[in-house]
Length: 284
Image (cartoon, rainbow, N blue to C red; front, side, top):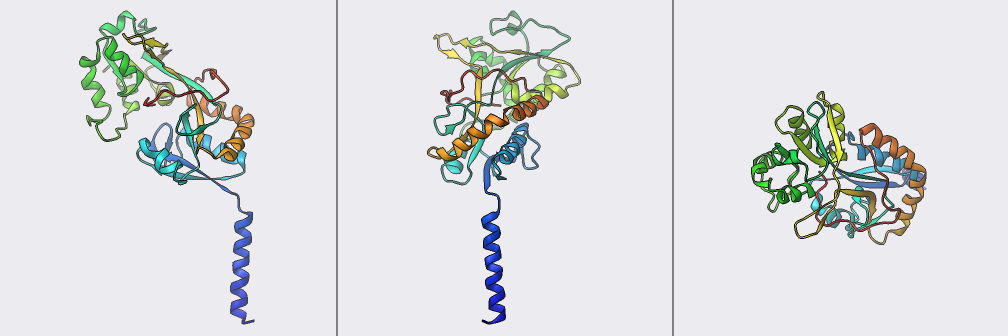
């Protein structure tokens, strides 16, 4: 055999052997600019959770970035561009979801020194306080119910850079929401606790957090403020789902530690089985 051909064949065999023994890859859908959840540099808490999951599965983690979360299931998971998504609602009908790894809620945030009595949406202080909520969330629904939407509208739009939501995804600035509360530009903020936890923890002005209880619209429809969170995989990928569920049994204390270091006070999941998620709810 020609010596050069022999070397080429040997090299090809070595590469094939290396590929066969290399760790499989877990492709994680993750936004490049979505603190506190994920960033291109891995600075989000979901980046840390993904790294722990990959290690537990014996898989190398590959980030598959996206800019617009509205289409990531359709264009990412369903088209096999990525394998898993962290931070999805338990029971999301577009996916197969694991048992919840934590439960959290929306919170009323106030300055601790002011000590306002805010317990629910009927609290007297909400009638006159300067309010800040994230558009598209259950908090906006209740802002309309208590008649405070119109006079809060300008501030709500400022959180998204005054860009209209129509036909586009708008990322709202939760860090600004907490900063404005601490500096007195607003009196009460309502936000998804995991989204604001690191900013509340870092605030020089001590802030008080109260879990937002379930409420009802004027037509009697429930407005839910607490949700279970799971890992989602493509429908039909029962093997990967089973592998993740098995790993989660060992990983839960590690996940709890990551969430705790972020400042997230996790509630007890409502169920160990997937539960139906509310449609169209923004988690910001």
